[in-house]
Each structure stands twice: as structure tokens, then as C-alpha cells.
Image (cartoon, rainbow, N blue to C red; front, top):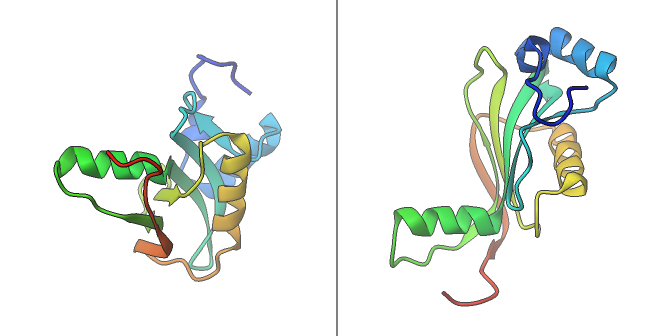
Length: 142
């Protein structure tokens, strides 16, 4: 496993599920953190299945607070509620783009690992944005 600050080897960036899974097995990891996770967002690469095929998920994982702040930045003056979401893009050479937003306090390792389990267990994923759950609202008015 690369040390913090070291670049990831090419196999860690592979969109080929077999190559990526071999890298994970050789490095003793279940997933790859890309860069250093921040309080409200992390980039994670992990393997799974999508539409019956093995894939490499190239995931941006965000808290709903981060998603809310991003939306307010682009639409000042409007208060928009956000809900948990899963957004799946078209497969790329580096894997399948995935964006997940959950109502968690931070994107620490336990939250990342729970998110990965959730995605791996979800059987009816399909491309596009899927929202679910109750709308999230900030604790303090802005």
C-alpha cells in the first residue's frame, strides 16, 4: 500500500475489475482512498457489481451538508433541501463514476466502509441519480 503522499500505481487506477481486484488483494486493501479524505468528502475506489458485471467504482462520497453548501454556492438565496442520493454515470476507462451523498456527520473510515457495503448490497442500481429518504435540513439556519 502506498504511503500517504505517494502516487498510486497504475493498477489502482485501472477500470479493469480483474486488474483492480488483483491490486487490492496484493496490497491487502478492500478499497483505495484517493488523496486524503476531508471532513465532508472523500474519493474512494472499490470493486463491486453493476448490472450483473464486475466493476470498479470511482466514487466521490459527500455528506449532505457538503452537497447543501455546494448547491447554495451555485444558487444563492435559494434554500434547497437535499436527500440521500446515489448518482451513477457512464462507464469510463478508469471505472464507473459514482457519487454518493449521505446524511452522515463526516466521511471518516467507518462512514466510507458503511457506504461501500451499502453500494455492494444494493441490487437494483442503474445509471442516473436516485434520491431517497427524508429531506435533510441544516441544524442552524443560514
